[in-house]
Length: 284
Image 1: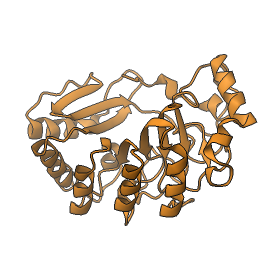
Image 2: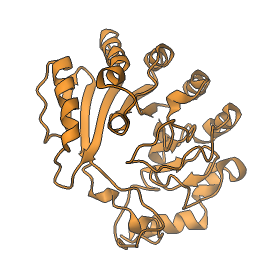
Image 3: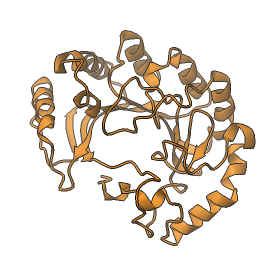
Image 4: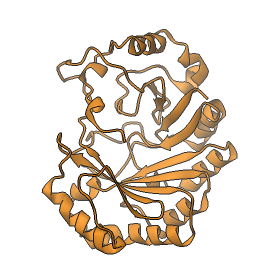
């Protein structure tokens, strides 16, 4: 195995416009099932885990089942990241019926960035999913994410309505200072600092530092563009196209190997990396 995690963007469509996320979406649209099969053949044995996310929400795909079936056929262990807005009956059943799904991440900040749904409307389908997950004793984990804490790991005031709600629903006291609060069997409230997405328009500030990119992780956008990590949502560091050039061939490309070698030497040679502040978040 070359990587711990490969990020696969099945689609960059999410249907939302959250202030913590890059606003420009639906640039690349949906990766076709035919291309996903091509990709699965290339990478199924290249990583321990495959995360169906970079931008976009996989639960919006009209035929998500076909993609899950393909991943299952190639024995790909999956992680799903979603906003939590699309837990209809069909999607709830899908996520419960695939044993190769190891983790479901639900970004609760998406709720805080909208005004269309009440807290109850948003959480009702999520809680139904959680209760069914507990009843079936599924082996996967559900991560309820609040990645919006400040630099001192303190929560903004808008989080407290969620803390109160979850505490009441799961009958658990929540420690606001903890990265992980265990709410029930395999259900975790996971907190982290709010991070700023790197941007080529920002002033380069960080010229030294190691990174998990190209060592533990790599990303593939829905149009096949290979990127070094999950934060290159625009494909600014374009390492080639897996459908045209092949995943294995791209791993040996000059730009990729130069980046990897530089990280090993504690150097950041790409401008996008020089504006990346993800190293400031807690990784526990």
